[in-house]
Length: 151
Image (cartoon, rainbow, N blue to C red):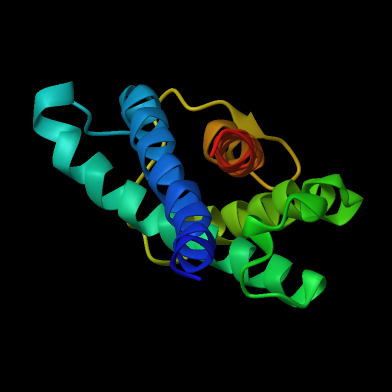
């Protein structure tokens, strides 16, 4: 009973922990592409907060998959990794969230500006923030799945 309960909570925590670390790494790598960047040392905490915000996107993705799989602990069930929706919905929602947030942050709220950021032509948002939410969520899922196989 305790082991089962621990496994239910461990997989979501691994997913979120891996997500935070991967997003923190990505945020720091793309930081020089934004206006005002001076050094990694000075911008680390900005990237740290951004990675925390990225966790909100990861929670939305997690919740969407919980609804699709009809299980709040879907990530602990190895069968859900074989379901195509798990791997299709994850980057799709990530991309939609990233485009919407970048459009708002850059053009409405003016929270940041791009410097050398490559843009997606049709929507004029940063390519790397969108790729971030396409690549990192499946990587975090893969990591959670991989670690669950070895428990």
